[in-house]
Amino acid sequence: MKIKKTERTGRSEQDSEWIYGLNPVLEAIKSGRGIRSLYLSSGRHDSPGIVHIKKEAERKHLTVTIADIHFFHSRFPKGHQGIAAQAAPRDYMDLEEMLLIPERKGEMPLFIILDCIEDPRNFGAVIRVADAAGAHGIIIQSHRSVTLTPEVLKTSAGAAEYMPVAQVVNIKHAIQRMKEQGITVAGAEAAMGTSLWDVDLNIPLALVIGSEGEGLRKTVKEYCDFLISLPMQGKINSLNASVATGIMTYEIFRQRTSKSIK
Image 1 (cartoon, rainbow, N blue to C red):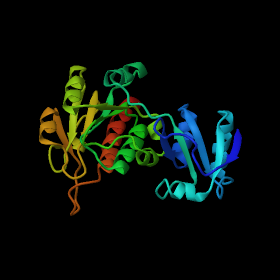
Image 2: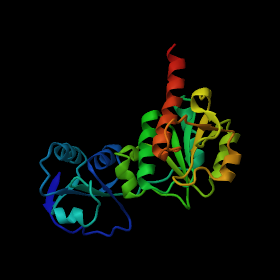
Image 3: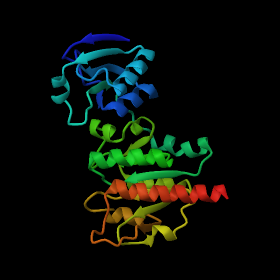
């Protein structure tokens, strides 16, 4: 591992993307993504988390640049933790390739479809919970939807390095393609449809999550095989999209694992 001091990147950013934060940078290094530049804060480069990353960087023969804290404050929002990297852009997976993942793993399909989610923190949190709950991929639309931005990668806490994401022009076409593959499509809709606790989810499934403000679009609802909702007793009749995704995917996980454990 080579260490140098500088306050400039010294390279064009057009062919790379920024990753910042301890876990996102660490997982990007461990996953084998091409790291082109690694930057550590001059005031934090001896902290335990940074030391661990430096060891990983040494194993990968990466050059580490020690940068002034202004370097980080001027480029990233709060939470950068004094570490950042320029890496090869994160590739989206082709939908057809994604549909092959469950069979290759010998598992029952579980996909998450995001209908025009625009909040990067929601998207990042969805990626994180999808990875934890064993989903095989996430599908987003190429317009009116957040993409894999640095903030999304940070919020995912490194899970974005492992969770396949497909970007499609029209999610309704993606839903139709999944149905052709024998995958049932369930739309999550507040105060509509069958309670989550009353549905058998131990089937090949794609879960559709609507946008933060409007929920599922009407045309998307019509493509779903059925709608499910979360029972609520409070005065607020909806949940954050990532929270709802977490509850629903873990109910799917619970049903599948509890039936296999008996």
